[in-house]
Length: 249
Image (cartoon, rainbow, N blue to C red; front, side, top):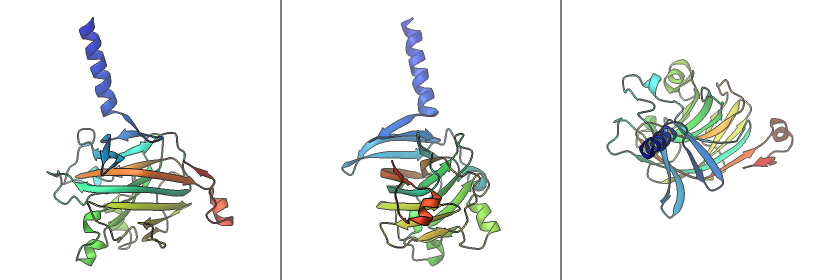
């Protein structure tokens, strides 16, 4: 009987770790979606460390469009976000060894995630090329995509160059503060407290209008996150009184 109970507990733990494990950092609880994660001490502070789970969601270098820009994030629970500001501090490392030779430290934020994780918007960084000596590489530092129908390859093929990508002065192995202001069909990204934005999405392409927020990583990346702040605003309130906070979590 004891042996059966042991295996039942072990099976329950394994299922929780693989599907929907929850982690708490401060007052915020996150559900892991196709990532592995821990809350750890890193550089003197508590952070959420996540990496893409290749067992839950395999990667194929020959099928990038089908196997990247997927729901690979730690999803904030009990949040319904439509418009407002998302700010987070994040630190990106390349896995060693990396499952992808061209890994760029993919790290960022997903937002307006629906309940089933089948649709969302995202802005993420490729920090490894943020300070490249090649301007063309720098122009691919920032990436917007909308899951599931507007991933990076689709956007490059069907829209003008640079419409959904851009540059930002970032790098791997250093803290980056990303702030995204979401307003209706537009989103604007600010880096490291800059007064002016580095990147604008003039028209987002996602099918969702509200949902949760996720801390996003992709292939070959170790991501560390802390100090997530979400300020919700109504679209009407922002048009009338710029910057007025309505709800903060």
